[in-house]
Image 1: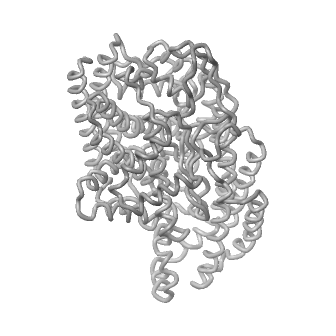
Image 2 (image 1 turned 90 degrees about the vertical axis):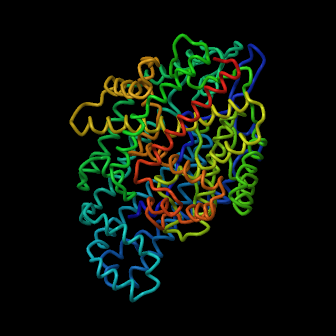
Image 3 (image 1 turned 120 degrees about the horizontal axis):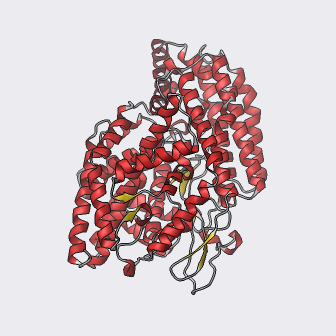
Length: 632
């Protein structure tokens, strides 16, 4: 139960490949990553909105520590009267909100510079306090579910103040078959730090311990490889640069494959342990039950995309022809189709375009977004030892924050739109909901982010007259669906294969995992795309595999946002208002019901089919534009 209230860090990464800082230099000059003090303050987030000093952080931690014995003392009492239950909840919510802020602050301070041992220690202290809070409240769910639904209904009728918790209690009661006894729940709570160990070790391995070599770009510059800079090199017009950067990066991961496979095996074993401990038939069933959905949502998603994989393969062949390649490799999937027209978008220009594109959502939405961009919400550029990628994180006692590694590309602009979508979802939710519902499940989290991308694309395409630039935007739209919908579904397929293999008792060796990844990729990309052996190491790079069945939610969310954004852009009566209400409802309803209220039903395959049909239409449009431009 405490895990539902302790939000910790909402680490929602924007895209598979983190975008980071890389600037043009003269031939032969080495490009180096800036130190944090070399970046202007206006491009860095302001963590003082959470705490003016580390001493204030310490005060929150002490307050949480003081609350723990009192929370533990309520065991056996909350089922005696509504007043006891309410007193307990108020104390818990206060402690959880403070711990949420403390963990977020420590974690984000760490992400600014992952070599800073001070914030490594603070983050670990906050995580340890979360385990202590979980231990102290582990009796809660067994006690709540020991009461009948009729008893709770009687309390709701007698005490109006209790009505706030009706959805929360209903969620507890519906999962009572998977709630263990109080001693068993305590043991699971005590295992929290051990459960986090594989993921923490994988993060340390990828973010700190791995040292990547230097490669050459197309101008002969030495480029020290990083996850962020890899993406820029993959956009090089020179196939040799793309190949060298990609294979060198993946081979570096491959050097750690045995350690990585041991960590992944431990990660999957954790998922299976928790599923079996809570009497679920599989890890997948355990993962989706938290959102009150059925496993068929994931299985139908995978089946729908694989059934329509021919259009992805058609797109790959079209890309091969446009690039003039004899054969196409996975590292060619990011190369610009118009290398002479490579689009640069400085950060301020990107912000202005995003603000203009969000106009269909109304003045209040745009005003709050502008205030966020100008108010220390965003950490913009890469610096040495900064966490790679992009994410949005929010804390109830402050406001949303966004981490970027901006590099003045069109892709970076879309990543910024994506993350401000998350931030605005958080802002609306925290503005409208009490703490207990002031979060949202990951099942709906990517709707707001990909919704913003859809609005930005619509705005740019309507305001673009140059046919070649329009072709670039169609390519961007295709890449959004490919990356967020098709690729994430492929990842979910791979994740399912890993879990099923382990559930059958098969060893997850480095060789087995790499072969499994290559086989999965071939099922989607088909026989005409070359899957180099090194691409088998991709599973080491994806942090989301350490979050039990998370990636599929990117795909279902994009399917949902495609449907909802079209309604808003078409001016359908009430569509904007229903969407803002969806953003504001947090977790006060089950996710499927939240989306149904906004106008889309993700319990059916229809949104997934519609998204693949949209992808097909865009590929057809791209082929037409390429022919008009004489590129094929």
